[in-house]
Image 1 (spheres, rainbow, N blue to C red):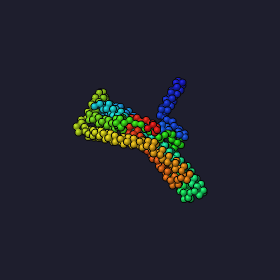
Image 2 (image 1 turned 60 degrees about the vertical axis):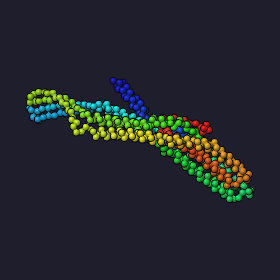
Image 3 (image 1 turned 120 degrees about the vertical axis):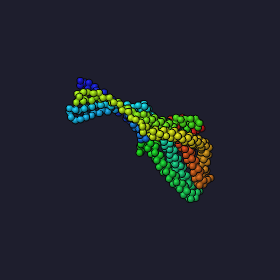
Image 4 (image 1 turned 90 degrees about the vertical axis):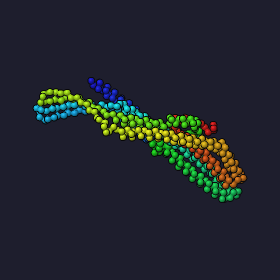
Length: 423
């Protein structure tokens, strides 16, 4: 007997442990010193508060499904007529309501549609979160490159200042040029400080997507030069039917229609069957009691609620049609932004940047030999930095446009990456 009790306790403990493990949150990924885009996506999907809210909402609707399948409870009634023992009549009845009009089945179907709608809403939140992570991650990559660019510019400014100082000491350059070189170096230091601040902000924005106030990584690992390859716009438009927002809109129509069906069933009155027994003390008899209760739908046939539900169903259909138009326009804008940004980045990479780099190197060497003044060196340096910043900006715009496409299409988007040099 005692062994059976211990065995039951052991089985119960194992059941509780398995249940706890199945509901335990996944272990967070420790990015260490580097963070990839895949790790960032995993962290956000496992720890984002909005995803947790969507999961809890879907769990709540499981309770709705359970309640929708419940049948009406029977009602027990006890009644005594005349308190005198010789003439007392005692009645005990049990009444069972019976739902007509297929109410229970339609109610269960409506609960299932609610569950599907919650699943679609969760998929939409995941698509939006993935797009936010993509945009924030490439924002960190761009901020990192901007900081590296400022550091390189500072080295160039320091080298130019050293050359200017030597030439001033040699009497080959005016002291004004040395002052300009120091001003240029100070300006670059300010730009470097701003770049570091922007990087810290970008890292915090990315970490906030999985609920960390302070980033647990020191560097985002990836190449901002990676390009996104997409099919044609017509094919992307065909993928809109599988987009999370469209699926949610269609399920909203189904939900409203299911509610309308539930309201229609309420127009059919339910009946109640009563069975009981009655004891007549005066006659000394036990009597059976049978009853049937049928409401008469003379005034209230639930017509107002039915009309409201049907109108809201039509409204949901109109909203779904309007959403399709909005998504098509947003998809076209993001596609054109991605295409134009990638073309601009290719032009910067293959044409403008090499020319600016060659011009700067030639003027810098000429300055060392006294062929150019410092003002010309400074102009060439500014032009090179400006080209690099513009190239970086177009690359970031391309990634943000790709993130917008991911936001619209979700997992239906077929996005691949390739190197900039392959274009």
